[in-house]
Each structure stands twice: as structure tokens, then as C-alpha cells.
Length: 109
Image 1 (cartoon, rainbow, N blue to C red):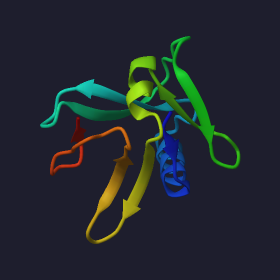
Image 2: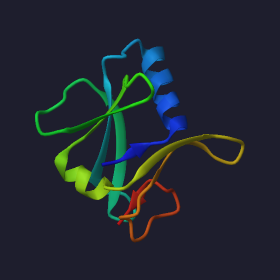
Image 3: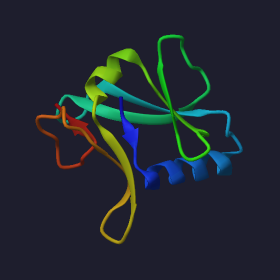
Image 4: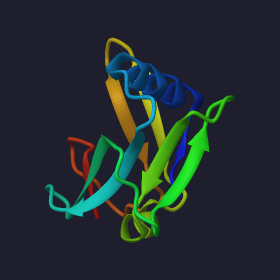
């Protein structure tokens, strides 16, 4: 399953709080498509299936990440980070299962 860095955990917590939806979870999924074959999808979700993988992050465990079983296989060992700088800003996935990725960084195979 994917792990979150401390920076990503903090940012997700801030976004949930700003939305006033702290009961939601961050769903991370892999979908067919993109320039290299698969693309990452992330959104807040309150609909958690019985077979979803759920992991809590943060000191208080309030940041929940949900991954469906099919995506979990492709995200095993992956890390979600958040960067906020002049050259790069936003969430980025580092995935050891990706054999190649495209220039946009949002798609892999």
C-alpha cells in the first residue's frame, strides 16, 4: 500500500480541514490511461468499500488513505509526497513498480 510523507500527511489534513470534511478519506487509485498506460487519481471520498485498504496517517491518525484492491497491487511500496517550492509544487507519487513514466509525471507503466 502507498505511504504518505509527513509533508503530504500535513497537507492532506489541511485540505480536509479547509473543506470542512474531516470525515472523508483520501482515495488514491490507479486507472488505465495517460501517456504511459496508467495514471494516478486522487480525490476525497466518503464511500469506503468493505474490501478497500484503509491506512491512517499522522500523529492523531485522522488522515485516512483508501486504496481499492486492484490499485493496491500497483501502489505497493509507493510514496506520496507534497512539495511546495518555486520549481515544483503539488503532490507527487514515487512508485518502485513503475518501469517508465512520462514527462508529466502523472502517468506510468
